[in-house]
Image 1 (tube, rainbow, N blue to C red):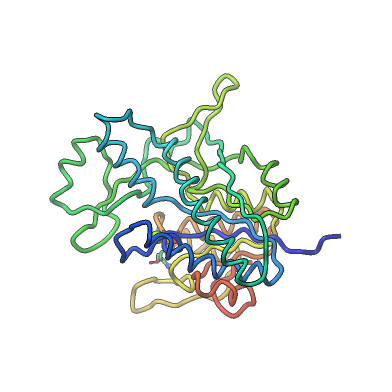
Image 2 (image 1 turned 90 degrees about the vertical axis):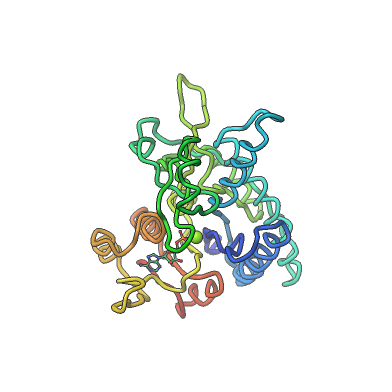
Length: 314
Ligand code: ADP
Ligand code: MG
């Protein structure tokens, strides 16, 4: 029997691009190189790793390019841009992870699966956009953008608090799941469900992309459950989940049960646009038969797996 544990690692925004930088290709590669170094350490410990990642900044930027060049080239819709970010980020991760693995003496194939994820065409999320994508905007830029048809939401503080939001329906089924399993069984490190997967709906037996961005943490939980993975590791930019986050009463949690997680979630400790879906993903994974779920920072990935950092949901 194969006793190797399978981990689905979900990479957050910071693992792909440092928000303090200008977002150039060189900056993206630098961030991805750093992340791959950490992932290679986990693989070197003997875990079988499957990677997922977000795409909020990248897909928003791609949409801006579509719009800016629309007189020159026919613009592509959001679902196609979702697929493009899977290729863009998957390609960069493939290169950097291969090199990071070689540095720790491992030669393993790293492959990206363009992943489609089925959603419900009647999902209420289509009428209520919540997923922030692309750059942040100031109050002054707002009217012009809203005239273009953007739905904007105040997501931050400071000079540029606004961000475009798009629909984020629930992931229901991963279309390429069997192929992903085959690649994993063949010994590949697979990057799948990038940006939450490309949302598709089935109409009269045919698949059609829809303009939305699925939450990557919820897609990761679904992927991890369907793969029968033992561990879900959600990497973001905080080392631990907190109660009363950002207030003087803040307390960081090192362990929490599914029941406690549900209670704190309903009490509003974990906001919808950030920590909420991560905690929800951890809950769903454990309820679906997963052994352990962790939420931590990229830096603490390995320590979390060894029980020395991060927040464990059990
Ligand atoms: P990512 O882009 O890495 O997937 P987000 O940026 O959406 O993740 O969410 C992570 C952020 O959530 C953290 O950087 C932190 O600022 C914020 N956050 C909100 N509530 C909490 C909480 N209760 N505990 C910890 N972090 C929280
Ligand atoms: Mg983020």
